[in-house]
Image 1 (cartoon, rainbow over the protein chains, first blue to last red):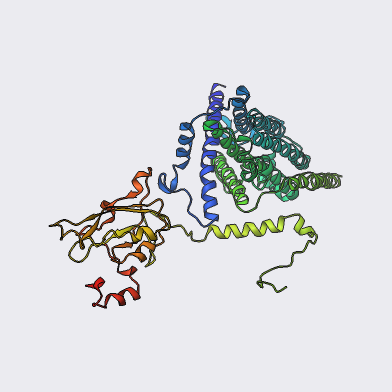
Image 2: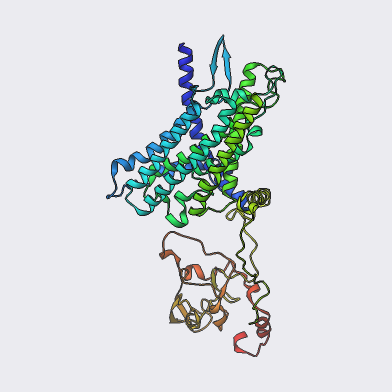
Length: 347
Length: 189
């Protein structure tokens, strides 16, 4: 019992550290990907290939002067970035980072907690994240910040609906809300069964989900809450020093977590093809599975960046049109079709 | 009315088709373009480590030339200052004393000669105005600095050292070289 407790503590710290590490190197990767796509080199001065750039950026943010506007609401001004960061980090708790490791007869699940409402929890925490932006933008007492914050909350609320509907179709199919069970459902070669990744069964659901994920993460082409050309810096205009750092960092953590959720829900999570046919040790399969999951996550982070540096930003009315008139009906239609198919095949 | 160019397009306000409205084919096209660029050679030159080849007539930091004997050619006539559109050049003239014949070519010389590199637009009009072939622009780059004061270059930075002559032969046009051959002119004696 004690060993499991210690293991969980280690896992919590590890997930925390990995989230931060991934976020830090996402900033580096973002700049590199942007550079390569624009035929440039990107940051290459700090360390070999500029690999120490995130450290330099972090140090810069720490050393910057901390400005809190006198007309702002100080308590909320500090609360905003903290809340955003906390919610960003909290979602990592229910994601299955791997199968179980067995040492000395005790099996350790590579998941902090397997609650049976995993997806619901993720949605709940993500929607609290809106408050981080809203409070930060409102407390700044600045028109640009407020506009950015309003845009962010409106955008996140409208896209969460379509996102939820796209997930319901998936939940209907798998019959569970637990992320662990959804992962298991996609495992290849159990007892000679062949289970495909969910994306094969639910391509539309995946499409809607990933578009909504872009909007939820405030990423281009839906980065209206902070569009530089219109709103200076959006909701974080007034923020400086590490408070700004927390906002920017939390956004990259959000991106990492969404990539993890997309991989888990639609791309088999920690499962990889032929995992049970190679005759490997169970622990070995678990480790390889975690590597596979991280490969998928890295690919999706790259995909996020790839899209960002390809497509221009949507106009606000186009964004709302797409969300309410495009994705929402489409996700409901997908839901109806999924239901009909399930009904037909189960009879 | 006659069109100015053949490139103008007639703007149409037609409705988008279904495929255009769902954006996805267009996005796919864009994504293919960006991924292609990922594998293309970048155009960046890592500057301090690697310098690009300069144009032969690059106009960079000025040099005040000496003649073959090592005497300064500048006579402080002020034509460069007059011709300068940015008013970057100032000078103070002085008369040559006895015993200074080795230092200055003619009876008058510039005691101070200053160019404000922040004002200078590197147009090369000073060089064109100079009757004594004293000032030239070279392919050297004016180095950056933090303060403004250090950008006012005096004679210490402008006059070429005797042992380190600056080659300006590339900046002398064909006409100038032709003109220099006419030895009957006082200028070329």
